[in-house]
Image (tube, rainbow, N blue to C red):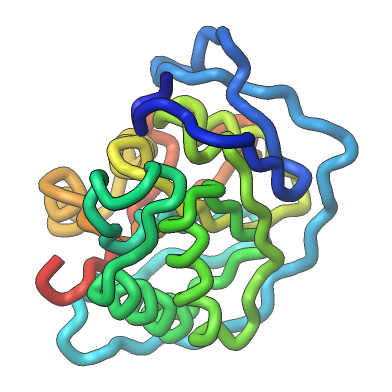
Length: 239
């Protein structure tokens, strides 16, 4: 049984990351989890396109600085939008509410206007995470390829960290769409630096549809707690 409740129906395997967490594992650098070795069959990635920076009135926006350089890697962590109540559907099949759809669209607009660009999006297979990404997509001028994996559905913070650590060296940026508490715990654990205001906001809460943007100046397999800089943070109005 996962933290989401009992699994129902046939498991989904979508994309090259499909599959369940390993049944055992020691975790990575103090975060519990179930790391899976990198597979040579996983895809290569393209360079990220240039972007621009702007803000949208009424949305919480923190200034960006110090992002750039060939040694920088970008991690964009997204919590899915607000979902329908648990009693209305099996957990993997819970869709977004009307507010969740609006907020996810707003998240997509902010991501486009912020200038943050990634080479790959990886999402949990749950309906609420897939729908969140689908609502973000129309607002992105250069959307990255996306893969859906049960691994992110079941993962704790250590499992998410394992996904980051096995990325190909040529990848310059990745976006994860996942669930709390894992996404919040991962963002907070990675953020070893950043402005006090940003980090205080992140420590306090990570509401539905929130986005945390972190940068690291090391290889993917060298990422661990405290190694990233919290560069940006966005939450929807009323989040």
